[in-house]
Amino acid sequence: MSLQFTIYFSFLLFLLGLFGILYFKNYMSHLLSLQLIIISGGINFLGFSKFLYQETIWYKIFIFIGIISIYLLVFLILFYGYSRLNDIYKEIELEDYRLFKIDKSDWWGDDHS
Image (cartoon, rainbow, N blue to C red):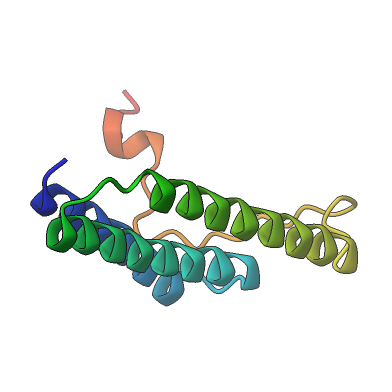
């Protein structure tokens, strides 16, 4: 993997996280977006350390996988608490927060003849 690919991938994760924070209004979506931003920063640090020091980074990869698993565990705990607090299992409210609303008629046309 080159440094350029690492930077592009990290920037893509950062943009996904930023879009999630700016677009969604849900608390859990904000937490997930913040985790994407933090993971993109970690990928940047690992990419630049590989580029600068030219050594094996297997131990850094294992540490990074450990950090991701801790974030996943924290996310699951928060999701469980949030879902039990708001009774998400009893009522499912579907709110439409999409930026573009595309229906079947947009693809097939409105020919009713």
